[in-house]
Every structure is written in structure tokens, then in C-alpha cells.
Length: 324
Image (cartoon, rainbow, N blue to C red; front, side, top):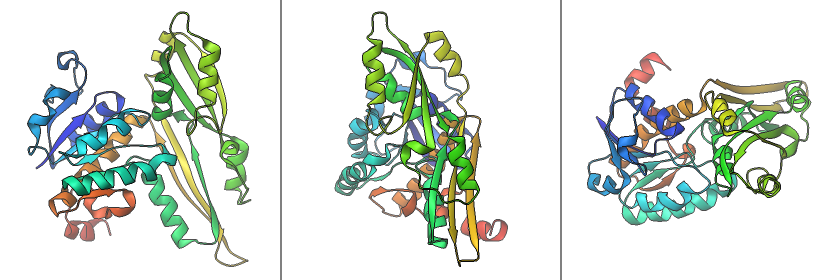
């Protein structure tokens, strides 16, 4: 059995907990939290420990699934955790992935551990689709659309702003752009042409709403390149919206093999729960990291570096017999 630890128990941590409980070859040694462990009631009856106890599990865990946010948690904590444990995370700030990779590659090699980063559906599954579609149809253009749905990373980034009590952010594809791609028009679309972002934000009494709105709209890597709508609402409305964390999206490759023959490749996802699905992806890659680490791999890897067979609980012979 692969021994797994879960670090953090927010929406993603809950999703990972559910996914691990369904994995036939995994055993959860514990959920590790910065909160009071007694205050948590996990969705599955796994043991809960304070983060202060994590070091006591050194050598007893095959892989840690990190469920922190990309804005501040993962950049400030993953490298230190990687010194003692193999890790998988869902770091999703696309522009900072090369920098993040370089840091963890160095730490992983130095301490003999393995880290898989940016694991989820985008980056993650969509990244694989973009690479695969481009490889088989080199004469063409890529298009990625997200939503309509809740972006956890963007919501978390807003919640980090001073004066914000709670927030949720929706990524919404622009229908005219989506239609042009589906029609095979190969439009030239900039970042802001494809989506708008709508935010619902609850703030503390006396908070400077104008400053908060300005901070959101000017936030690099998150909102600065998009048409962004900020709605100030009650905390109750935000919490009500957080009960349904649906999301989804599309990856397209539109191109030609000859002047006469064009092709449109599409991968689409429709998710009732973004964190539960992301947690399922994280868990599958946890299996892969545990296997690769057992074979002696160290450093840092992404979805491009991991053979697909390592994700499955099935053997290579079973995959050939039943899925090939």
C-alpha cells in the first residue's frame, strides 16, 4: 500500500481525502493542518494531526499531497517540506511555474526527494492535451477556455487582500470568441479576449472598497490582463455561492494537414466540483510520484515527465489487456 499524507484541509484537502478513500492501493496516514485538529471533522474518518507533528512521520509516508493555495502557501512552504518528504501540489500560477520548478528541482536533488508540481486539470490534464494536440497537428493554433466556473486559485488570491473577509471568483468564457474557434476561424485572441472574471467579495467593516477593487483588478498573473467585475456582497452570499464549486473548460487545436483538409481537436471538462476533481488528479499523481521515488527519481517533475501508466492502479499487462 502507498502511504499518503494530506497537508491542508480546505476545499481541495476535502477533495483529496475523498479521492484517497477510493484508491484501492493507498492508505492515508493522516491529515495535517495548521488549525486545531480537534476542530476538523473530515469527510472520511482519517486521523488528523497538527502540522507540528509532521516531522514525526518522516520515513513513514511515501508521498504528501499538498493542498495549500498558489498565491502564498505553496511558494513559502513546499521547498521546506520537500527536504523530508516526496510531494505533489497543484501550483497554478502559470507565469511562475518555471521559477517554482527550478527552486524545487534544486531542493529535491539536494535532499533526495521528488516533487510533482502544477498537478490538476489546468495546469495538468489540459497541459497534456495542448502538448499532444500540437504534436500531432503542428500546423495550427491552440485555444484554451475556462469556465463558467469557480477558480479556487483566484478566489484564494482575493481572500489574501487586507480587508477581505471572504470571496469567490468566476471565470466566464466570452461566447463570441468560443464560437469563432468552434467555427474554425482561427481567430487571433489575446488573453483578455477569451474570458472575463467576476468576483463576489465580502469585506470587513470600514474596509476601503475602492482600494480593494483596484488591488484585485491590478493583480498580476491573476486579473490584470482581464476584464474584471467586482461585486461587494455580504459574507452570507459568498458562503452560499461556495456551496457549489462547479467548473470546466475546453482545449482546442485548430489546424490543417493540407490546404484542403482542416481539423478541430477538442477536450472538454464539465465538473460539478472543481476541488473534488482536482483532488482526484492530485491523488493519481501521488501514486505516480510514490512509484517514481521508489525507483530512485529525485528533483522536480511535471505532467510532461511522468509516464501515464504510473497514474493507474492497474499493471502494465492489465492496461494492455483492457484499455489499449
